[in-house]
Image 1: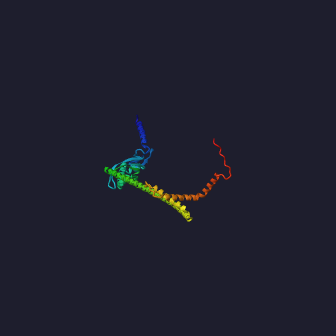
Image 2 (image 1 turned 135 degrees about the horizontal axis):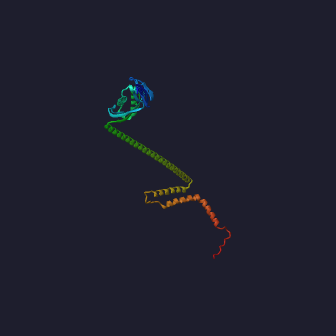
Image 3 (image 1 turned 60 degrees about the vertical axis):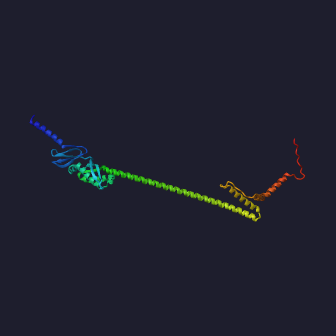
Length: 332
């Protein structure tokens, strides 16, 4: 092999190495920075790219996809001097590879430190109850502050989430007692409200019952008064008729009126529930006289029609003078 052959082989190999050194293939989701003599010149995007061999070189290979980073546990003192243990997680994405490569030395460590510092600042300005019950507010405030702080580094913080907030054991026990007392208080309030409502409904029912009972007594009294009024009217009418009869000289009507009252009075006396034996010290002749008066009234009222009917019956049964007497056939 001559010297020319060796030179040709070396030259071809050098050309091939130069071509390989000048062609760069960047994978999807990454950006590469190019440095010329140690100075940043440009950024290679995903795909096939060409650089100047021996002058340019790849500086940093930056992941442009969204990434997650854990925020380690730390103790935070709240506004009311309660100590809690907090950890979290942050989601960020690089949108400028050059800034993320050259504006900050250790990107992940910078994000973690900045987030932990702001967690202490945000939660330290809140009470323990607010820290435990306002996680969304804490996440929002952290995201706003941290995102504004990392924007010069070419980053975008998409989310910051607080994973766990662990108060001390004695505070957990105290909160448990407080919750139990609060629930018992609510239960007592509900029970008292139920008893109050029950008493109101019972009183309302008794009120309605008394109103209906009073209306019933009122209606009964009205009916009794109406009955007594009609009875008094009938009594007055009867007394007026008797008075008119007496004025006309009809003593029998007066006897009937007195006998009727007399009999009704003794009937009421006999029907009395506390009477077992009724003694009647009255004369038979006076009772008979009263009954005779009643008979006279009946005779005066129905006498004429009864007399005419009896006469007609007698006329029909006695044959007139000269009339033939019917023969009675002999009995066999």
